[in-house]
Structures are given as structure tokens and as C-alpha cells.
Length: 320
Ligand SMILES: NC(=O)c1ccc[n+]([C@@H]2O[C@H](COP(=O)([O-])OP(=O)(O)OC[C@H]3O[C@@H](n4cnc5c(N)ncnc54)[C@H](O)[C@@H]3O)[C@@H](O)[C@H]2O)c1
Image (cartoon, rainbow, N blue to C red; front, top):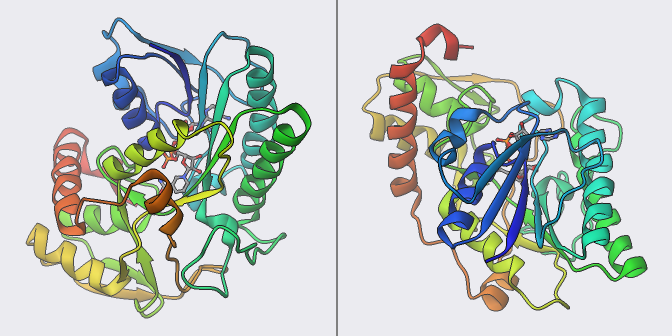
């Protein structure tokens, strides 16, 4: 049994990760400032004897005794990370410094939840880990993209300078139950709009492609990355390599929800990548991992979750 710290543990991915780590028999300390996460995401864990929750902002130092750290704290959707961009950069950069400092003090192994956004609007498809990316350093998305890039730099400098055991996972679009219903991400947007019978907003012509990984597959990959030998640092891409156009996604969600919502088209936001697809050869080879959940199957579970949420929360609270 290990003592494991999960930062951002009350968020979408973090809450699933905490559950999986408890199931595996570990002690889990979840920290979160509840900016985008919520207690409801983890309330089913509150009575678990090996689960502990602490309200804490990673931009401040933390002193705890742990064996492993999963650093997930950071708002992940444009609506949320652009709300207070300075805080977003601080969360990635100061957060990384504080947690790497903690890992150094207590000799913990540390995994960074990095992102495909570090590739920016890529000229290379699919993206392999050795591609350096094409990121706008001064745009609206830069607080997130550059913050995450700098965090990766810090992880590798702590490795070179202090011989820390680091793992950098580059996560591509992931979806599933407990996604924030209002965060403007394409899957949650489409599902909520379809369930409420509102128009489904497609940015651009809908021919831009994305690949979507179901949360259970993603968490499995994160656990395997943490358990790789100490000399493996990553970066390593994790996600689903199967590409769908945004239009195909919208049509599938309409079919699965039986919704009569109409598709409406709006201009593309600035810096929105045209295509995003991971090359997951390294993960397949090294982790013996590949996604197992088909989009249709994952969407059915996610739709069921949002359907329940919409029944619990007044529709006005979810709209917009
Ligand atoms: N979901 C995806 O598709 C995806 C893709 C790429 C990378 N990631 C990364 O995975 C991580 C988790 O993403 P998610 O989708 O679960 O998002 P999320 O917003 O649901 O979770 C992030 C959590 O971090 C917390 N947080 C934010 N700032 C904090 C701070 N300063 N101190 C402490 N806690 C803070 C939030 O309250 C939230 O609970 C993020 O680092 C994100 O960048 C996610």
C-alpha cells in the first residue's frame, strides 16, 4: 500500500483516478481548490477509510508525506482556464514548482498530467512525442499551453538537476461521466444541448477532427505510466487515435439521445486546431496499452450521467 497524493482530485479525471487508486488498495490524499472540481465528484469516497480530502491551492507550498504524486490540478477547458489566465499559468508553473519541491523533499515519484495542447496547432499528424509543437505564445490559449509546456520543462530540469523520478503524460481529449456540464468542451456541450433539445453548436464547418478517449481507458494508462521503471520519464501520449469529425460526433450524439436538436454553425475560435490526433505507438509498445472503449459505448455512459445530472439540477443552472 502506498500513500498517494492526487492534486486536482475533485475534478473530472482526478475523481476517477482517486477511485481507482483506492480500489487498488492505496491511501489517497486528494487536494483541490474546487475551482472547477466539486465535492459531488468525490462524495462517494468520503466514507472510505483510506481516503482523505484537503482544500488546498497548488500555487502554495504543501508539506505532506507521500510516496507518489499525480499532478492534475489545473482548469482544463478554455472557458475555465481563460477565466483567470494569470492564475492558470500560476497553477501550472508555481504548482509544478511546489509539487516537484515536495517530491524532492520526500523522495516521491511524480506524474504530470500534461496535454496535447503543448503541440499547439500542429503541422504534423498524428503527433508523436518528439514533435516540438506550434504554439502561439501570446494568444488566449497561451496561459494553458505555455503553462503546461513550462511545467514539462520544470519536470525535466528537476530530473536532470535533482534526479527526481518523473513521468510526463500528454493527455489527449478525454470524456466520460463527471465532466463539467458547462465547460464548453465539445462532448459535454453536444450532449447537454441534445438532452435539452437546444440547437447543437458546431464551430467552423464541422470537418475538423478530434479523437476522444473514454475516461476509464485514460486512467488505466496513467496508472501504468506511474508504474513504469524509474528510468522512463516520458513524455508519452495517451488518448484514442481514432479520429472523428465534429459533425460525425454531433450526429452520433443526436442518434444516441434520440434528440431533435438542430445543428447550427458558428465561426471557429482563434487558435482552434484543425486536427488533433495522438500517435500512441509508444504507449502501446511500452505500456502494452490501447483504448478499449468504443466511442458509442463511452457516449452511452456519458449521456446517462448527464441525463441524471440534468434531472437533479434545475435546467437553468446548466444552460448557457
Ligand atoms: N480532460 C481532458 O481531456 C484533458 C486533456 C489534457 C490534459 N488534461 C489535464 O488533466 C488534468 C485534469 O483535467 P480534468 O479534465 O479533470 O479537469 P478538471 O477541471 O475537471 O480538473 C482539474 C481540477 O484541478 C483543480 N484545480 C484547479 N486549479 C487548482 C489549484 N490552483 N489548486 C488546486 N486545485 C486546482 C480544479 O478545481 C479541478 O478539480 C488537468 O491538468 C488537465 O490539464 C485533461
